[in-house]
Length: 465
Image: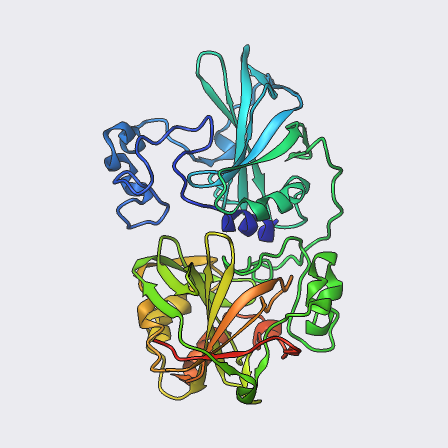
């Protein structure tokens, strides 16, 4: 479930309308009323009540949610909840602050306390909003209902990392396609529940495997990196069943890792590079960011608009950065101690990665600014970093870079990624390398994929601006 939760999270966009049936916002995106989930920020949870007069209840309401459910304080009563869901047309929605499903027709609903509530939509929160006896869960699914008097009723399903959720699995391909779209047709779906999960009527449940029950192994990959769509695990240990040479056999969805023709990383042979005029422009800016303990690496995710790059007339927004030790790419056969990846995405979902090679020497100022946070990260999934501008990272002093079209370097190894590798390396201290490795399990202490063949692909040389 954990990698599926992040997959849903990767598809979130700030759209102008919330999901149907949810309390509407009164201004468009970018207004003073914009809210977020970052504590200590202007739009964070503690300040929601002051963002708009219409939101005062967030601050002074007496019946707010979510809560910690203390089992000892509950009163036992006879169950009065009846479910009567049915098939209805639905669409996948890229909502204001989450991803979800809206039913367009009569999808049935529930009956409780003598009142009938019609199902309007469902959506996910990660991690769970409610807790039971202080325990939070990895995800929480909300099914939102409304009766003919406008009263709302929500059924919440708590979810823990483990086997893939069949309902999310049935939506995977649609979620991949949603991008900037506000909605994608799903056909008829019924919200029938079984074992606490929703099921789609038009597709049978897909087989699934159990992920390893380990808090760090179940960490999701970083946003912007190709998501893992099932519970299979991979590692970097050669000669093991899940090592790099076997990634393509671990899952049918990862076949490209084995038979892809444009895989990364590569050895950059300078004499093969064709010289071209520079076309790369940087336009980074400060935005809220979080430090993330990812599936196989540690990195930084930008929550807001952090700017990006313009390349060949296309704008790519910065999504995240992360480190590999040792470097994944090589130049004329030489590998480096660390490689930093800055991952960008265009509005057409095209990916562009800038690779910064690093050699042991003086401490890296950027890693230095994160040192205390990394030390405190431990087994936490993420930590708030406040406003962070990537301009300081990219001040490399390098006037030359190399470019080619390749793939992501982790499963499922999807291709079509534009790689730009800076020729001049940046320094990093041995202590900082140890810091980056310290949060990883043994199989991820060295998290560099072996070199792949360039083949007949073009390789270009550019001068950086």
